Amino acid sequence: MKLLKKKKKEEARKSENESGCPPNAIVFDPERGEYICTETGEVLEQKLVNQGPEWRAFTPEEKEKRSRIGGPLSPTVHDRGLTTLIDWRDRDASGKKLEPKKRLEFLRYRKWQIRSRIQSSIDRNLAQAMNELDRLSNQLHLNRAVREEAAVIYRKAVEKGLVRGRSIESVIAASVYVACRLKKLPRTLDEISLHTRANRKEIARCYRLLVKELQLKVPIADPIDYIPRMGSLLDLSGKAMNIAARIVKIAKQKALTAGKDPAGLAAAAIYVATLLENEKRTQKEIANIAGVTEVTVRNRYKELVNELKLDIPEED
Image 1 (cartoon, rainbow, N blue to C red):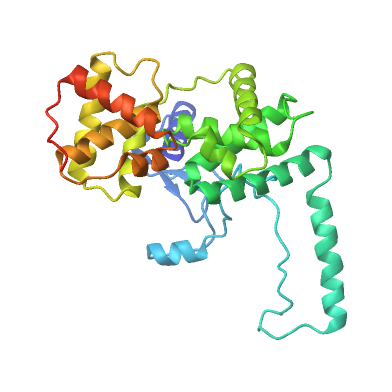
Image 2: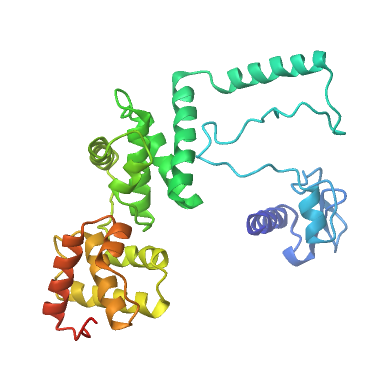
């Protein structure tokens, strides 16, 4: 809209220079597509193309209903969602079942439509990879932003030829891990490897390759990012999660987090918070949720209590 107004002003200024008509006297007639000077009646410009729709709408609902645009482009679909799909339901527009002859005809249409969508080896690779991304994202309960970020990273890897000689599952899993780190949605490599055929070592190798070759700036994992998810899985109160976050912040200020596993540190902070708020959870419960060992939780817990001089109530 702003660009259209700017264009009209520039056209009006141009017309003024040519005709000598002042800008405030120039009006636009949308029905005829003309710029007219109200002082002299002169048509300064005509046969202008109307950039708006040819229909009218008086309410937002009516405008949305009459709009003919499709869905937004998405990198999570191998062709970005530009092509149409032939539905698998064997019914016509009125809901009646198609005749056997028509059904076979549409089966052939569907087959050739799928073949026309996937023509090159890159298309086949992307189609398979996007299906794997969709499956893995559903298993890990990832939001749309993370899915799209992972899809963009994988596409860049395909363009650079990084996928050649490597399994699609491992590169997709590494892309998901990078996207989770970039979007501050913590998922560990162990957690991702549970839901894919690629093992942790392969995913870690592909992760390092993506970061190096695509020159990605992945932020360091913050223990605070792990607290909301762990707290909700442990059914803790907001106050307990708040205390855990404050403990981690103080530990960062005292440089206690350097070189420590963020998941283990977050687990220890949560354990301290549960003791302070009398919402007791066992170290084993917290360790299972965090994906670390009980020994890690115990060691990080002792470090936090000793270094921060926390007054922990005695356990019954």
